[in-house]
Length: 399
Image (tube, rainbow, N blue to C red; front, side, top):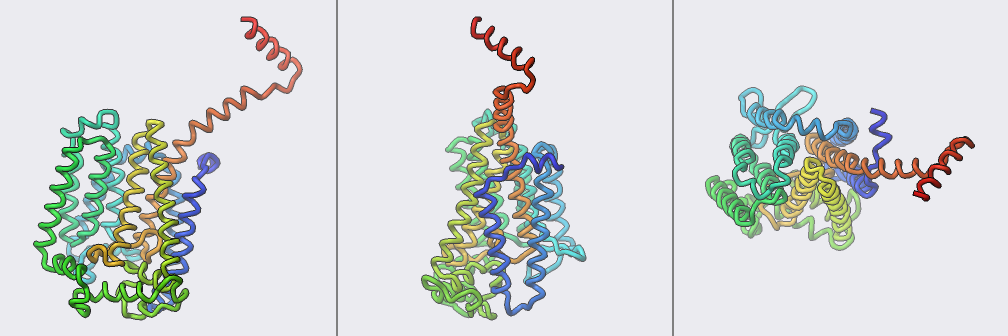
């Protein structure tokens, strides 16, 4: 265990970005949740500590173990999403059954399903990295489990997680090298399916129509979005200042969770919002570079893991920003590393640890080569050794 930490040389930009987001979260959540009292702030700080411990522990697990656990990970994801539907096991909140009460912690099965499904996808796709254009006959390995999992998630209902998982699957298949014609067909089929699901459920259709013109019904379907847009308008260029926002005072629902970005804009303005976007963009770009580096070294499993982490975190970040700003229909997805929520923070820590572990394993061969080169150049300390080494080098030159 100590050896792993000695070998670890975490990307400084990646580490700085993650620490900056976590520190900002520790300051921002107490401000956004001021009406909920100090108890929630203490819980959030405790969740940040648990997330840090989770990151450190997960970093010790080699990617080879995650590869062997790809099918157990899928089974665990299916079991968690099925258990939450069992009466008496799953908790119902705001009309959705998404949580399992463990006594000391309320587990959200759909959050952990994201990282478990990524482990499964990366493990399956790495078998076909050198013949990606032959994936067509093997797509059932990805789509059949994903269809079953999507059915369980829609029964909760959790349409947002379904969208994220299908986005992850199609993007990874594209990276694996499926033909463009098949890729376009998948996008079209998934788009039609999502459209049918939206029309099928009246509340989903209401969310889509309300985001187009939230001011048409600002006190019902468009209420949350109009309050978020008011926060955007109050923020201006430089914001009202930390703690000085008013939309969080029971005007904007979920101000400390799904809509925390609106509070950030209100209190830090356009400049603060752009700074947050730049920091998160740096995080995602470093994750993508880790995936590319692993691919160049033919560490295919690690490459898919790193790319998947970038897609999950980056995609969820963009969706959250789009929802808060009215560019996308309202959907309950947290702002990664920033929003309140133990499940979200722990899953983000797990995802980050997967990518950092890939980076460590991808860097190790270069360090070993450099170390061996230094040892070859280093002269021996004894006179006899120097003479023998000199004679050998001289003999080499004569030859």
